[in-house]
Amino acid sequence: MFLFTVGFVSLLYLSLTAQPTSTVVLLPDANGKAGMVELRTAGAQQTLATPFAAADVTNRGNIIARVADGQAVQQRYASTLEARPAMPVSFTLVFESGSAVELAPEFKTVLDQLLAAVARYPAPEVTVIGHTDRVGSVADNDQLSVQRAETVRDKLVQAGIAASMITIAGRGEREPAVPTADGVASAENRRVEINIR
Amino acid sequence: MDHIKSIALTVVLGLSCLHASASEEAGVVKVSKGEVLIERGQQQQAATVGSRIFSSDRVTTGADSAVGITLRDNTLLSAGPNSTIDLHKFSFDSTTHAGTIDATVKRGTLSVISGKIAKATPQAVKFSAPGMTLGVRGTSFIIDAGQ
Image (tube, rainbow over all chains, first blue to last red):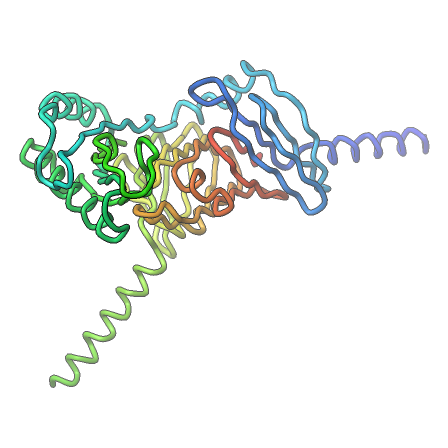
């Protein structure tokens, strides 16, 4: 009887300690690859870097690494995954050199696609992000990129998108579409990105 | 009288500054199903599509409920049923892409697709759950904090 009780208590103890307090599962992204997350507890750490790599954290701070079954993950977390907001989309418009006002002629085509996209998103937000090439100083380019974003914002408002839905940003020359040396004119980098989310 | 006015104005300005620094706008609710609440200090309100989420907010879901939130840096969050998510801190500079995300899954589940902050400064993105913290180098994962 004593042994039985001891056995039962240890089984109970094991089952309690084995229950994870938290679990992390890395998911494949849109192109099927996985990113990377680093898990830390008081006494252990674990990097997850492959699709469906998972880790259970026990209440003693141990980490048990495993590979989760993809289908089981989709089923178990279906209600969470179904509530994910739609992926944001981006459109790009290019500018004439050094200009904040002269938009390339394809603006009208992009505008139609953009209006259709705005209609698809719940509580849509439109972010207009100006970019420059590397001709001129960083400070001047910051200013120019904001002016470009303002130009496009005004055109979007004229096209019927509520101003309250739109925010603008200027990234200056920080995020070239095509990397160049400083001072190089680049039509592809003189652009405005319109992000819809 | 003018003196009193200026004191009143100072107090009002002081309070609005305090509010601004304590709660930067973090994102917008895009999906809301069932019972979803936003707790902001002592206040509580239902989260519907279009509701704004601020730094320091807590978001909770009831049974058979779920919520999807897009943050300003394009991070996509969704929480499943019976979840409590604390967004301790969010900041984002749309020019430099510097920022901070510090959130805790107190219970329930949270799925994350990381955004521009994780790309520019991954060390500034932290998600926690009971007994653990998670550093994020990118993209998509689920945190299950149990019940």
